[in-house]
Length: 86
Length: 518
Image 1: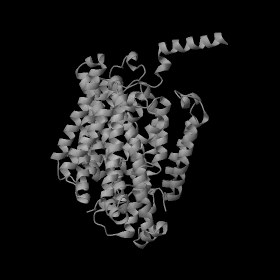
Image 2: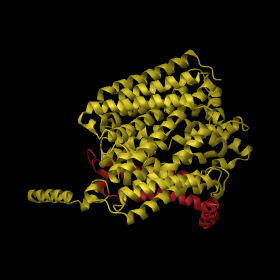
Image 3: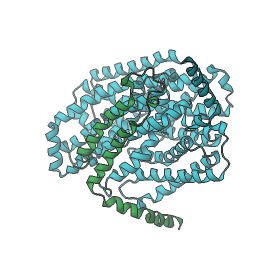
Image 4: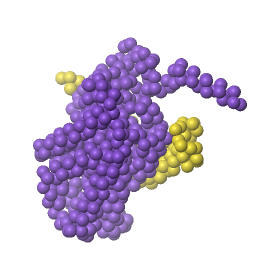
């Protein structure tokens, strides 16, 4: 009895979400995925210098993790853009 | 069955001797419990990155992943891309610095200090149970594969492999685990890299792969994103909302095995850089997993047992000698995960159960602590080897059962870590209620998930609901229970340094000295 009520309650909650997601075109899926990586690359630009270098042995520019993250995100954006939906 | 020649055994023997020698060499660095469990917090970023990736890349991820790629194509790569890299970045920026600075050795220890002993005990027991089940299942499952394809006796295999991993982990602790992981990664790159290239040329390169999928009307095999209502376990919505959020965060933020590797870093910068460096290495992994799976379509599209693809292809494309190297790479995948699981399980048992039970009397004596740590490691390897010998009949289905089991408490633990670090109002009583009800809710939801959620296997979305449920319950009860005293939160909650009068006084003193100097 409880299980049935739970199922119908969850279906009621999930129905609009389900419908919304199902209605999205493939280009939107690709956009969402590329945005995840793109926002990651953009987000690190707002990190403070001291946050990046905290506890680092020196402040040489190769230790700037912001460059690392941007370099890391570029191939993923390209991968999801070109292979997201073929 | 794959026939091994003398040269294959020689390569394998050389590799095992190398690993054991390195493990024994690491013994010299072990003086205290922290050395044994966190490699004395001395690991540079590149070791942290490599050990993170090779621990996460398990033998059954490789075997089952190749099978998954055969059935569903490159969508399988999401596990290492969308399902890892964004979470690694979030962990590196928002969580690892806090966990590293709190100087804990384990996730239950953080929860114990932030909330209470009961939360620490419940999570510790769950981790121990989960890791023991995982260790025993992996030992057993791998033995069945090696028996089937190389004719090695399963009982001997379990005992020898358990004994071998136990030996170098017992001697060298986390130092051995981390530095042998670097060696294992090189062997994986060499062995599996060579195998992947051989498979690629066997099927006629890129054009051969495209032709095979088009011929069998499987062009969707080259799509990373599959529709929401796909018959596969990888709908794009599940990948982004489930795998890309809660499940991957729980691996890189609140998974004992993963986080412990990072806590061994020599500085906060190395911990963060190790995570980001691991992201670069993650780019490579799907290539190894996906290519053999898709290549098999060109060779035998009607293959009945996709989980055997790697072994079929090994037999087909590799000559003697190369088989030995590939076998070493497969064992490297197996051992790099098992040694990390063993070390983490022993950490939780020692740190969060035994030392708490002994009221930390052993802390007075580092030697006694180290003895307890080694005793825990020995106990766990004996238990898991014994359990692996007992369990039977699980075969490949156990992989999915384990993965489901994993999602049962990972969501709730992640919710507690987030609330613990970022919400100073979260209380100990609420954490216990949230944790227990969250786990029970996940079990209940698992029972009805097939009826409510789309896709063949809805486990990806299950974790999201268990996480959200725990978050809400813990938040609600935190608001109606007494707050934690500020002194308890010192050093454990984000932004606490702003409110801590001692930290502010120290900063003011430093500022005045600098002004005087000017």
